[in-house]
Image (cartoon, rainbow, N blue to C red; front, side, top):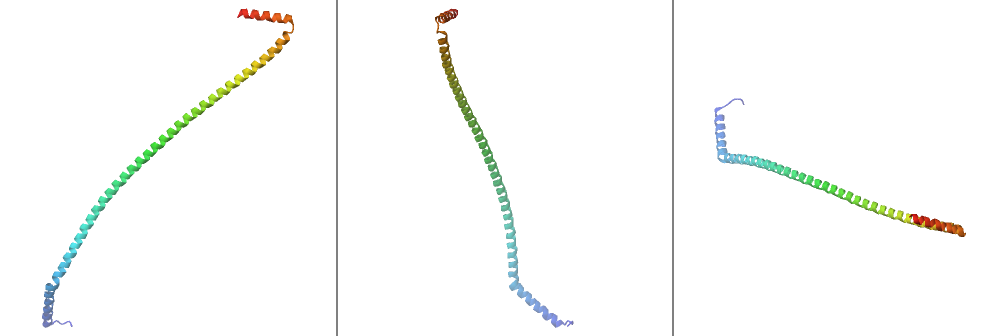
Length: 162
């Protein structure tokens, strides 16, 4: 088995050349075409991946811009909401203060009226009591004629002084 004979080498070479010729005529072009096709598909896949990467970068930029815009809009809405809240609170405080002042003024007026009414009633009672007391005192003092004359003279002297 280890010996080499020339006939075997020649027939092996002829068989090899025939197989090589058949492969070159029949299989070589389809193999090269499939390799070329494979190469083109890999190239297309790389181009598609590059294009997809670029589109992804553009989408990322677009998404980032949209996010920034949404954040800015949210911040503006929050600022508006805070301003509205502050305005409502200030208006409520102002209305409450006006209402407080109105109620306080009304209460003070009511107190003044009640006080005036109470003072008027007290004056009326004092006047009534004074008249009753004066009437009783005068009745006692005017029982005699002498006391009546003295009282009249006194009132006349007081009247001339004024």
